Image (cartoon, rainbow, N blue to C red; front, side, top):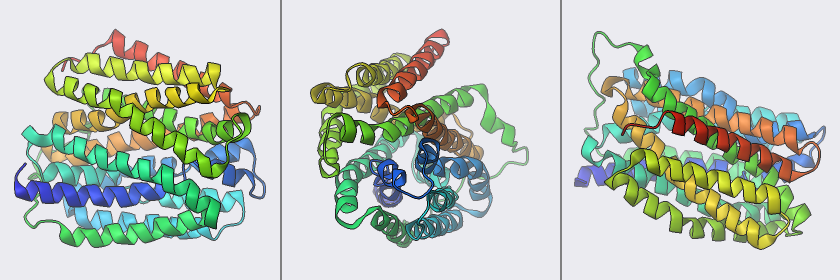
Length: 381
């Protein structure tokens, strides 16, 4: 990468880390917190976990399209302000309905597509996969740190403190915008620009993939805290050790997949990654009562997830039309967050019987269906 590209990638990656940390830190603890709120039910618990995905899904496309016209930075600032406002609202709420409302407002700060488009604007196509991998690693690092710090803060100061921290980090991300190198330009508009180009079949295929991926992740994290606490009898402050250890172990699968994907076999690497998701969910569903198996299952699941989380947007940014990259990534991010919303509903629905393994069984079926769809129409490159 050129020096200006390295600087841009670093700043954008740090912004994404700040914003995603605020969301990820809540993931391992929010279900347990929501369960103790007034009027809480399993369905509302799942909704609290995944609610942000609904407004994210609704606004990614318009925000991405607007950023194609007026620029990325104004849209990013507005989105960060909405995210901070939602975090503050949820922090001050005492009922499950207030937390759901705050999560919906958090999600209204729908800038993932715009950030990714800004990253694509700042880098050349020949280094795009590498820059998206760096971006994915930054988000993965935020995920890792959040799983360590989130339960610790929640145990020491309560989950409300995590909402306040999310608001502060949104402000930090806004300040980072001033460190971006000058001269990043959007692709020139063409007179015949058509939004439907963002819905080409080859792009919708990737949109479907990211939908399923995030449905699996969110549904899993509706059930995982209860599995660790109620089935394995682990204190909340010990949950991070399982998550972090599994994430580190997952690199043994993720890194080889990334190298294999850069060399050849784009479709085959996707197949392997989806198989890892299926395997991890099956192990959780069948043997979730054993700590060692749960650890291995999470490592296997995270190996596939981390690869797909970086690889899918890289594929889409290359296939999308340059002047509609923001809109195309908006569609992609909408599917991603709609998947998170659907995952919250799935997790809440199948957790209603009090058995976390039911959630993992449904996730295994969903991942298996994804694998069948992928193999019936394999990717061409």
